[in-house]
Length: 158
Image 1 (cartoon, rainbow, N blue to C red):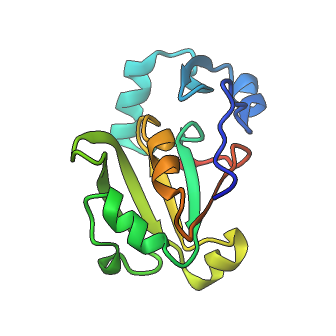
Image 2: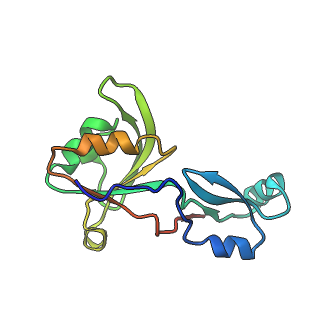
């Protein structure tokens, strides 16, 4: 296993855009993320409900997973049968420890063949609160699994 590392303070790859737009910020998952743009959170929430909104989700910790045992390991640590997550689709799941206790919530993406070539991985795991990254990394040790993270990828949600 190589490549799972998140700095104590993570740099948002599109922070300059937020600053130009006059954003107020908060720290989420060790990353500075935009909170609002001068009109207040309530006003922006209402605008999203009436129209659409673009949210910066770059703070989500993302780990690309591959290797011969990737699906087997995922099936052991999350509450989904990964064989039912078809390439190009995703599923919400819980990451559990060895006692069955909740560690974090995750979204598990089964990458398409084209995405596999780009990321050299079969799966993308997005951690909700980010608490599960260290436990997940330990779960991969000793298995034929590769894992890597990259904070330089912006993630926007429409």
